[in-house]
Amino acid sequence: MGGGDTTAGSGHGNGKDGKQAGAGIFLQNAAVNFQPDSGDVQTINDAIADDTGNGSNSGSLIKSGAGTTILNGINTYTGQTTIYGGNLIVNGSIADSAVIMNGGTIGGSGLIGDLSIDRGSIAPGNSIGTLRFSGNVTLNSGATYQVEVDAAGKSDLIAVGQTATINGAKVSVLAEGGAYAPSTRYTILTADALTGRFSDVTSNFSFLDPSLLYDARNVYLVLKRNETLFADVARTPNQRAVAGALDVLPTNNELFLDILNQTEAGARQAFDALSGEIHASVGRALLDEGRHVRDAVMGRMIQASYDGTGLGSGGPQNTSGMMMLGYGSKDLGSDTSPLPVAEGPTFWTQGFGSWANFDGNGNAASLDRDMGGFISGVDAEVMPGWRAGLAAGYTYTGLDENARLSSANVDAYHLVLYGSGKVERFNVRGGGAWSWQDIETSRYVVFPGFSEFEDASYDGDRGQLFGEIAYPFLYRDIGFESSTGLAYVHQETDGFTESGALAALRSAGYNEDVTYSTTGVRAATTMTMGGTVVTPSLSIAWLHAFDSVDTDLALAFASAGPDFSIQGTPIARDSALVTVGLDFAISPNATLSFAYDGQFASEADEHGIKGRASWKF
Image 1 (tube, helix red, strand yellow):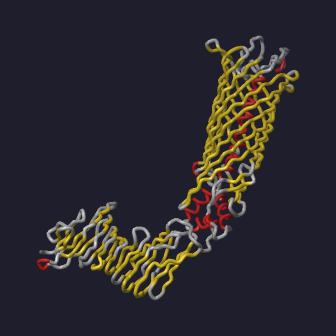
Image 2 (cartoon, rainbow, N blue to C red):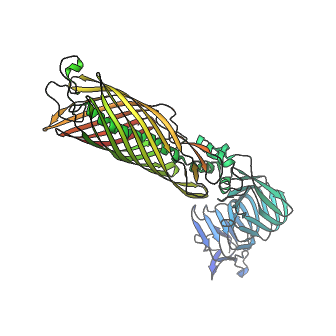
Image 3 (cartoon, rainbow, N blue to C red):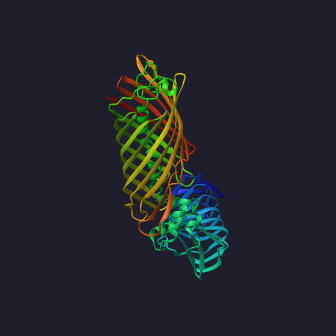
């Protein structure tokens, strides 16, 4: 029978020069060609043998498809095996065949006769494993030995029964995850006789350099700690801070060893994951959140200043010659008396909620915040034209730093003293607040080859002093008030130690002071709709943060090592505050108010709603 190719789609020859017979595939002067498509895996469990009957000669095998062919049988054909592409995995035996490679990859854990690679790769095992040869192996300059290793000292091995000849081939080290020692030696090739050298060796490590050693029969791979510091591959201040602390850990520290086997990208991922950035970002969020407590109380004091008028909280407009702002013409230069202010106590409550996103800065990650709560209070006139009050409240804050797989929950309780009055034609308002905070944090530390969960519970406190001076004026039927205010905010948290093992952090606590200024204008008017007095209002202000806008926190690994400073999501230096409200006078002594509250900055935005109810007695 004439020679020809037999294409085996399922692994069984069916051409005129190869046939399936019994439990095997028998070749009659044939070259069986396995050509699975890319991504396909073709498994041949039958044995392939020569059909020596009828004077036939030996058959041969060709692997040309881009997919994978797996030979699991004990194959006894004696013709040549030629590989042009894809993967040929030998888990059984082709001990009577010589393999010639002009492309593709040969691997598996079986037995092969001879091997010569002009172009292509050899990758022993089906993961880490040994590929054995009964004859000779020749690795020419176009060949690459893809050797897998692990942290336990195991590696791929080429075991050659006769002579291994290396003519400038290359070694590519593919390391599995794990905690590698600063120096590990592996046997990657053994032969009865060895000639030649590999021309190059590379690895996927950043902190362990590969090198090769030789003796008369063996090739050894050595992975050894190089002089590259962890900090050398860091790119951001937070990454460099973490890397610097890791660099000085003992070389047998488990966390140190977990970083050794990383690529540069894997190391940077590890530095970010280990940073504990959420703890610094919590401080930033709580500093910013203090604005909502101030605004709730300040809103009540504005209401008290303009009781029953447009810039108040929606009370009925006085029609006996009184001005919308709560002032008579006398305040603007005529003889009309000022609008009287109620002397009795006023009880009020305000609920609010908001959702915010604070952008990262290329160092700290972005932070999402959802918060809600209420403030309730009572105030009364303590002297003509001056009121004082006491308020208390509760807020819940949820924080998510998704890029760091971190989150925090904060329950806060607030107590506020406040007062307001009038000096000449200026309104003066101010107060002080103290907040007690219960903080719960959780984060997942995940990077290649490592995963651990950390959580912590600790307390925080926030104190703030705030005040403003405002000047009212009228334009047509609209009341205006320009204002300038200052707020000093102090935020601190207690120390903590996270509950995790290797990557747990500890801190002595957070302490930060920020001063804010606010400059803006408010406007309101009063109208009647369907028998109900309605007051639309608008407030626009510029909020400016003095001092440093970076939120720094000193942290350290709980197990060992020095402190390092981590920056959280930064505070917005400048932002615009916009409030649009609508108030309803439901009775002469009761008011309901609803408003949209927004904060806009180049690196942050916040949107919220709030509602207030007040009752006068």
